[in-house]
Length: 75
Image 1 (cartoon, rainbow, N blue to C red):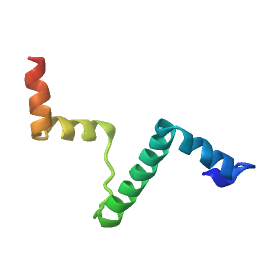
Image 2: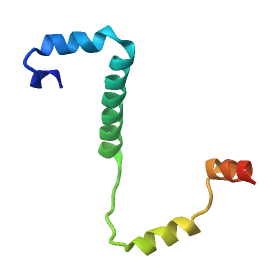
Image 3: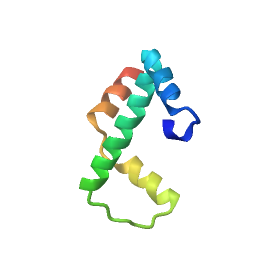
Image 4: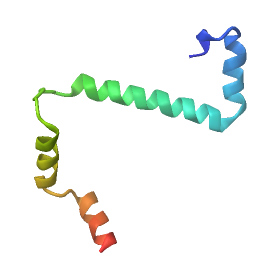
């Protein structure tokens, strides 16, 4: 990231000066690493579907506990 700047060391120092700036970079890196980890272990099968098929499949799927708790909160 910093290597694309004329003064990479200054850019790195700028991020380390503020915990919030550094946290945003750390968060992005962690997210990328997590996605790579999941994709390395995932067994993906591609299937062509129309938007309607996807939405109908989602609508008919059993509710998860998170969805159930959200639904009960709004009632």
